[in-house]
Image (tube, rainbow, N blue to C red; front, side):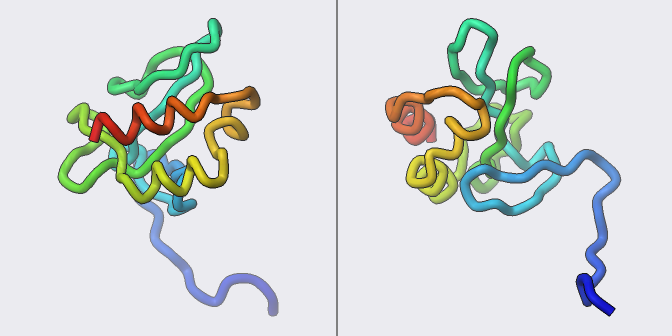
Length: 104
């Protein structure tokens, strides 16, 4: 029989994947980065801003709702793979990754 040999428990709430490390986590443990219709990219602290969203692991001790920053390792991995451009289906300047790192 093929497939996974290990069954993992899923949390009750929504689950999203970090574009940096690829790990699946509860939505509340991730920081949402959003690209609006006008092309601006920013951090969505509410998790409900209109636009296309991508998620990064939140820094230790700061949930997305706490307004904290993203995990440094995940920001670096996302920059290396140019993950935000792929997620947003449009070009994202390298400055965005630097700004995300500064917020930490």
